[in-house]
Image (cartoon, rainbow, N blue to C red; front, side):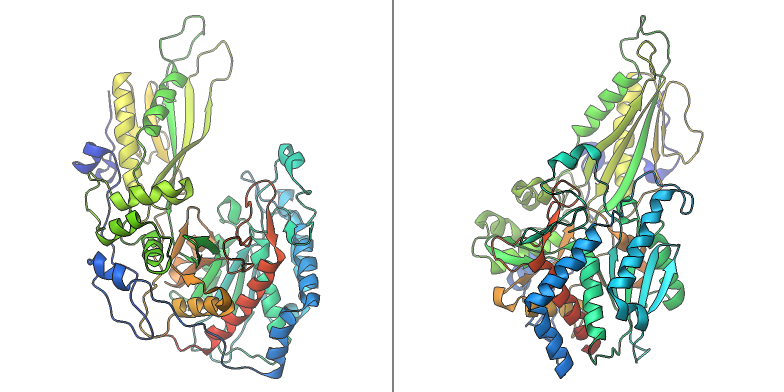
Amino acid sequence: MVQKPSSLRYRVVAGCLLLALSPFALWFPSPFRTHRGPSTPIASGDPAEILKNGCPQFEPLVPSYTSPSLEKMENFIDTPTFFNQSIQRLSAAVQIETQSFDDMGAIGSDPRWEVFYPFAAYLKATFPLIHSKLALDVVNTHGLIYTWHGTNATLKPTLLMAHQDVVPVPESTIPSWTHPPFAGHFDGEFIWGRGASDCKNQLIAIMTAVELLLATDFTPKRTLILSFGFDEEISGREGAGHLAPFLSQRYGPDSIAVIVDEGAGISTAWGTPFATPGVAEKGYIDVDVVVRMPGGHSSVPPDHNGIGVMSELITLIESNRYTPRLNTGNPYLGLLQCGAQHSPDFPPKLKDLLSTHHTQQCSAKDDPLALEASKQSPATKYLMTTSIAVDVITGGVKVNALPERTVATINHRVNVGEHPSLVRAKLTSLAATVAQKYNLSLHAFTGEADAETPSSITLTALDTELEPAPVTPTEVEGATPWSVLSGTTRGVYAAQDVIMAPGMSTGNTDTRYYWDLTRHIFRYGPGWDGVVGGGKGGLGNAHTVDERVSVGAHVNGVRWFGRFVRNMDEVVLE
């Protein structure tokens, strides 16, 4: 017997979903417009016009105000002395093992949180001007908010973010590391170690840039806020989950001019260097699937026990994956537009498909552009595809006893332009097929804690559910945060003629908690070593063996943050 979901929102969508079991696309207004100063909007439904005009570039932006002390600071960043100091600062930060674990207990009772005390002490010792001249609020024990108050309280603040914690290093992987994971080893080019790229590189670059500015005669008109969480790698609930409400209570909704957090950086595509700040994030939903079937002695087994039925359901789920779809709001569509306009090596087939691309309301029809673009790599594919990953499974307690309760947890990252409710509907449909085959009842997303019954399949969404992030505006009507970020990047990397394009990563960041503070959120790692076609300044082996970052990239990150703060201070935002 199959019990249907109790709410219409979780029922299988008629038509497209039942026909194709693939995601449907919602129409989003295009975030890309022509700009060279004030811009003229392009009709969002006209792909040919978007292709023709969709990726003009800003001129390099260099702060107009300067002084002997600011010029001295800029020159100092280019010196061997500063390079060596940068090695010491970042290496020492990597050596503090700020690992966060999925099973962390409460702050104050789980001793694994204690490592953030020495990290905070290290920041205090390393950046004395920040700690003597800026206001520091410690939020939920280890969250850090530094505030450099501007002289003009009517200007919305600039907010720079990073996180203190790092992904754990499994003991079994340590022999595979070229250098010990917490040694902070410098080999003449790279600093190696967990957190070197994700994201102590960014945190130390921000702090260094602000420390340098404090040593000059620079006095900001626009308030500058630094916000550093400490559990981003395990969902950010204790860190950003408290920091964002703290700032919201202090400043109110839509009170921040711009947020820059960790994210994509600069890399070469189609023979051209692109900077791709993340202007969106995919949604997120974890689902527990529970199969309950009778137990008994394994010497008299049924044809299919709970583990077998679960395996069949997982196989069905994995064989009905979501298809790639480039909804109009997806930033990767903007990157394709920029590639078509600025890259001589851009594939002709993609260019042809781009010129005729349009988004369908119903996903029964394939998206030819998305299908072709997704062939570039799995990482590219999942920038435009809802992902499915069965990551955890448990079942059975004894080798001679039939399993009575089998549980699988399935992670989904929801494509831009789609919704977690679509995942619920699709899983409900697939589970119904298996439940009917084995005469099991189905309890799909009922919201009841005791929904499970004997001989049943139960689907439950965990409390990690997240809609896709609002897409940050990249159109321009005069001066905007996007124009400042773009101009600053093209100023720092003027010699390489870096092309700005909207981007997105497949993961989620602490910015999920900050949506109410501003529409202008960028997930961006601006540090790059400047080597076109061979740059090593990206997220080098983040989350895995041999994580590292080039010191040249780190130094350029310091330069970028210093100039961005100054450029934001000078701009009159529209």
